[in-house]
Structures are given as C-alpha cells and as structure tokens.
Amino acid sequence: MKKIIIIFFCFFASNFLAQDNLFVKVKEQLKKQHPELQIENKLIVINVWSSNDAESRNANAELNKTASTFEYAKLKGGRRGMIAVVINSDESENLSVITLGKDKITKAIALSKADLDVSAVKTVAFDSDGNKVYSSIPSKDIFSSIQKLITR
Image (cartoon, rainbow, N blue to C red; front, side):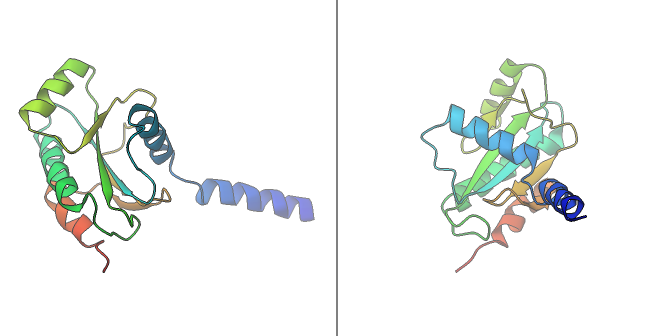
C-alpha cells in the first residue's frame, strides 16, 4: 500500500508541479543561442506570432516596448527583470527576419519554432521557476500586465 501511495505522489508531483515544457525548451534555446544572456531570476514572456497576423505583430511591438521598460526591473517572479522572446509560427525564417526588422523589434529575442510545441500558444509569461504567470495576454494588455508585477 505504501508503494502505491508513493508512486501516486511521485506521478502527481511530476505532472502538476513540473515546469511547463515550453518554458524548459525556450530556456534551453536561450542558453544555447545566447550564452551571454543572464536568464536566471528573470521573467520570460513569450509571444508566438505570424507575419500575416496583425494582432500577433502588435503583440510583438508591445512586448518590445515592455522589454525596454522592464528589462532590469524588480518583478514578482523575476527579481532581475524580464526577457522577451518572439517565436514565429511561419515556415519562412527569412520572412520572419524581414518582418521583425520592418516592425523595429529590437529588444525581443527571436527564436525558431523548431522543437517547440507552440500550436496552442499566443502570449504567455513565466516566472523564473517556470510557473505560468499569465496566459493568452491580449496585445493591448502586455505592458500593464507586466507593470502589475513590479515590486518595491
């Protein structure tokens, strides 16, 4: 009986207390592609976008502005600020680079969707432990949502 309870507890803990897989994969890609970047104790905000979706491109612009403002702010779940990540869901990597340049996205870090399951993701924020802070944030609310996390 004890074994069953222990196995059940381990299964429960691994499924419900584990970090989100997207968070883990994005963090791995950030470490690999940007080793100079300090990602510990930072909020990670991810926007999945498409070049033909105006709302997701607006979210990129808002996320870029938010990253410029709160990059080093003391935030709940990110004592050392935040990192903005944009992931393009289009097939064309070249179109992604051109669109980001045209939209003047300079603070947000562009990552490839390879090895990431982003099919059901829009804009999501994770604290430094990998817990979802916000999910499906509308573009007009990105700045104010992160602003609410400021600590003194």
